[in-house]
Length: 130
Image (cartoon, helix red, strand yellow):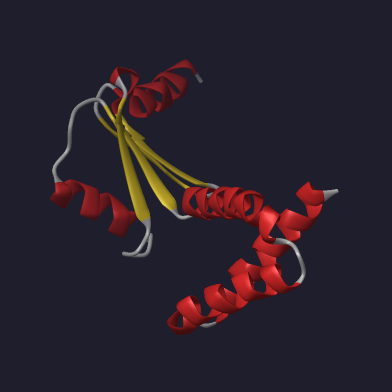
């Protein structure tokens, strides 16, 4: 029974902090006081684990994933971010994938932008066959 309750507490704490990031320390202090006064301090490690999961899920939603065949410069990463219209505060993950051959594949949320040579070759092959 404590897992659903600790998850609910983590979600409530996160909501309070997101609403007013300036008062995060005060919210955390009041939250720990609440747990202590209700005999729930033992739940704090589970609440923290849920907060970490929530943070990781949020981070994944706000991460621009770029796959390239070779390392790319920060200026190219910035060009990809702008081309895909991703906000400047998004996290960025760059992975080398030799299957890309050249160009890049960008993923942000549900959006996929495939500007790889492999994709270009595939499109050309489809046009030639049809």
